[in-house]
Image (spheres, rainbow, N blue to C red):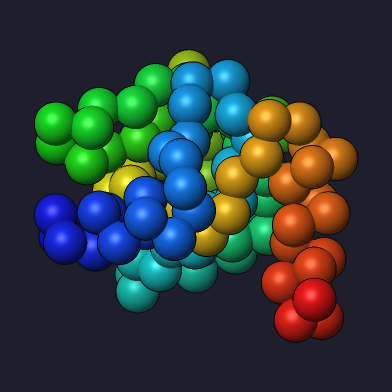
Length: 103
């Protein structure tokens, strides 16, 4: 895990910061509706614990059927679940689009 995160920092040249927007890639294998929402939504980094390699992400417009998986509209993930991040939603969307088309 530590090597993975160090490689992530090396490739990206920086680390995500509190307040950045983030796209998470997550699969729980037992809650497909939660997974679908997380994998198709952009959240905002609420807190980062680099010591434990965890990230807390805040989401908006959470469907009622999965609200039980969130605490005050936030959910925790391993930092290795970060697919991409950006300072603004527009920057993140641009990166996601570029990745989609291998640009």
